[in-house]
Image 1 (tube, rainbow over the protein chains, first blue to last red):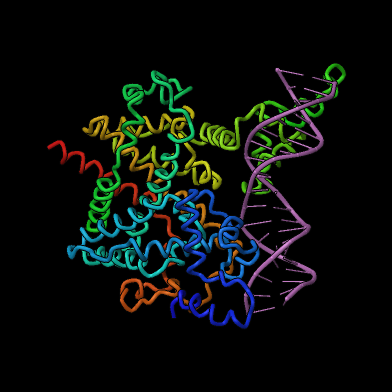
Image 2 (cartoon, rainbow over the protein chains, first blue to last red):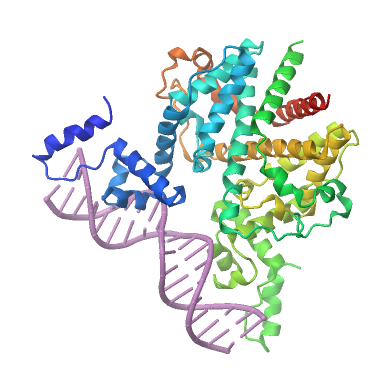
Length: 235
Length: 235
DNA sequence: ACCTGAACACCGTTCAAGT
DNA sequence: ACCTGAACACCGTTCAAGT
């Protein structure tokens, strides 16, 4: 049973019951994506989504538990499309590739940052996302880790990935609304840098340095460090 | 000086100027902390804070730019009190100790998760927090890194730390409001685990495994991995 | 200057009804 | 069943005015 079937079968039954048919799960998600693409994800509210569908705000609550539920459904749909299942055979490379896949999928949807921290997030993920978790845990075990160590490695990678996505999602907006720091102005305002020689030496180069994408390289260092640690713990 | 004093001193000055005097920066921060301690940080809103101070909602905007500004001021005050400045001499240990100090300081204030991702967050930090950044960058340089590599190492550690804090802040609430997953129920609901043997083997042990605090250990693995990577890049 | 009430432009969610 | 308007209980922020 596909969700779309509900749409195509509804016109048939509409002859009997005189009501607007815009209530499918697929249609709700499509409308939500339309709002995100057109107005930006900040505009995706329950009320706006209802208006986009041409239904009353209340009606939405018959198909979606709450706003969080909507966002997680949206993310799972996105994951199903973007999470490539082609992963390298070598376990260490596979761990890295799975993490990068999760990262890139989330990075493409800035609104993901909002849903990232919702309650029981991991437990509500769909199959494509969960299979990436499996890939990381299995890769760790193939590298000689116990299952427990594999879970720890996944969790550590997840913290790193979630943090990068969250920080990225919120520093991207900066340029848009706020006027950039004036030239010659210190980046670390209101802080006495005389006791902080390294930061003083960096000065205004900080924003430039911080703009570089270091996720993939940092990830590899992390995975190496974690596998080394697990190996030396087993010894 | 207690906040209550202002209430009691106000009748004295009220003879001349007929206005409530509750407008100090320190008083605002104290009132904000009172709300957080009494009602929980979710209840800290501009309106409630104004009510707590006994002033009009608008008046607050004469002393605080906006809600975000308020939260960052609050965090800086907190950092000033909790960020210990005693750091080990050995550079690698110092990096770890500085990161742990940042982490523990943030972990003690669950509302920190909200402010973590605000625009230009790093640039608005006060001296205690910035000195921890200096410690990490300086430690990396003493380990043989370039300044650029030192900044990268700080940023990577920051992503990891911010992610851990954010995930932690939002999984702690779970127990409170939502009924726990029923016993015997699968943790990964609605997902076919037949192709995911590792996760199937873990099953319901996941929540227990995920509850363990692995930050410090993961951090050390990360720092080792990052320093190794920087060293091999220099070779 | 410093402070104010009232208003603007929203939120998520729930209730008691309607068809 | 399915859908609704209206209301509840809030938000952050701004304006034109008051003292």
